[in-house]
Image 1 (cartoon, helix red, strand yellow):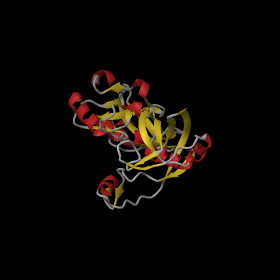
Image 2 (cartoon, one colour; image 1 turned 30 degrees about the horizontal axis):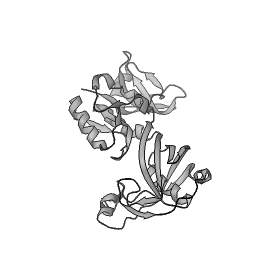
Image 3 (tube, one colour; image 1 turned 90 degrees about the horizontal axis):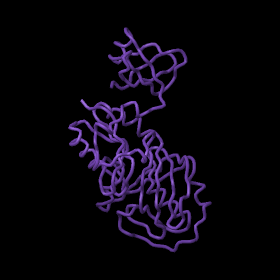
Image 4 (cartoon, one colour; image 1 turned 60 degrees about the vertical axis):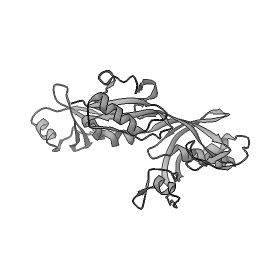
Amino acid sequence: MTVGILNINKPCGWTSHDVVARVRRVAGERRVGHAGTLDPLAEGVLPVLVGRATRLADYIQAQPKTYVATIALGTATTTDDAEGSVVASAPVPAFDAAVLEPFRGEIQQMPPAHSALKVDGQRAYAVARRGGAVKLEPRRVMIYDLRILAEEPLILEVACSKGTYIRSLARDIAQALGTVGHLAHLVRTRVGPFLLSTAVTIDALDVARALLPPDAAVPEAPVLTVAEPDLARVRNGLAIPAPPGLQAPAVWVYDPEGRLVCLAAADGHSLQPRIQL
């Protein structure tokens, strides 16, 4: 069974599901998933998980992400990106970098109406496409860093938390500037430890060469080698005493031969297996 992680450079025009389907065929493995959806018009880093590594999706998705976003000022669209129809236009004032300051740190963000969030059990985008009213609540997200790469067109580098909508950020920054706008182009350059500079293209995918081990998901996590009889308990999902002082939400556990056994959590007293690998 193939187990591991592929750092894929998703091309523009592909859905994240398209990439997963291609990996299933190339790898000959049915159990394939991804960690963090990219819209079809976006491109860049898409971690694809194979085999038992699919259980690590939440750990990868929780890590910071970095994007390069091109914002088209002066026109608003139904979807807040280039996929939608233009619904408004406005003059574009001179750019003032000071408008970015309120968007740094923890902010309240209204998700776009055309999103995958559920409204009364239905996807928001499905309701919006039918012309229905979409009522979403603002969400707290973290913008760790926000840098200007160019002003004409406006290109920003955004480092952010899980759940951040770059489309919403583009829309809101345009409004703060006194105009309207939408996300014209998006490239994800990082998801946790996975970088665009080391991502592989889907067309040239060689799974055997590109597959990363499961522990690449959280490379900074502590490592612990466990021998019998504790090893048997860990393999059965049972807690064992933790080394003194070890507290971490993720700990990689190996057997004496260096084989990865599981991902566990340590609270300073016990080590509890979370995901068997």
